[in-house]
Length: 224
Image 1 (cartoon, rainbow, N blue to C red):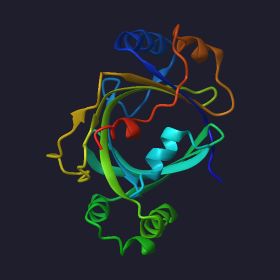
Image 2 (cartoon, one colour):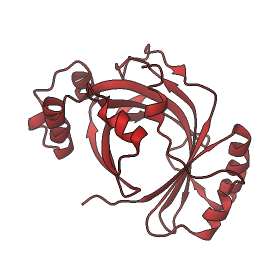
Image 3 (tube, rainbow, N blue to C red):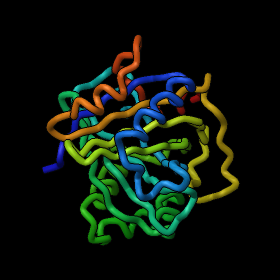
């Protein structure tokens, strides 16, 4: 069974980001994978011909899922296939590693190897690509500043410079151009297991900001 976690999302301003960065740096430790406190994320999201994942997110469907392939700092030595699940407001994530050659095969529509991959999540994606018509849909780029607080297994992230690849799905192609989506925005995400410590709850409080549904994938589909 997947481990479901609590999650808050807030849309905040660039000045809010500076304030939170200072607060969180005082109480959290930095993520060990970050360089100079941040890293770049590039993801390839999947959807079907009816845009089911997009529509379920916009409509706030209680139980939903989406698949993506993700890597960091444009380094293809570590790539993950991920399935994000939401149920009753809680989130869970399943992951499996992919090689760069396997990612390129999926992008090129070469799927015959997937059932024999030995990874259940890869087999599940293959099944849903065959049965539900899932296909690579668009690339999403952004910068992330991560903070970690051990009690409660808390992870706080500040995401900004969100960019869309429009209809480009060639994830590993460095020439795939991405463009900004709408007005500059920062997304504060707070994730935790069973309890959120008061020190983090206080650190992320911003007057006039409320938790709200925000999807980088949905934002990156505003152009189609």
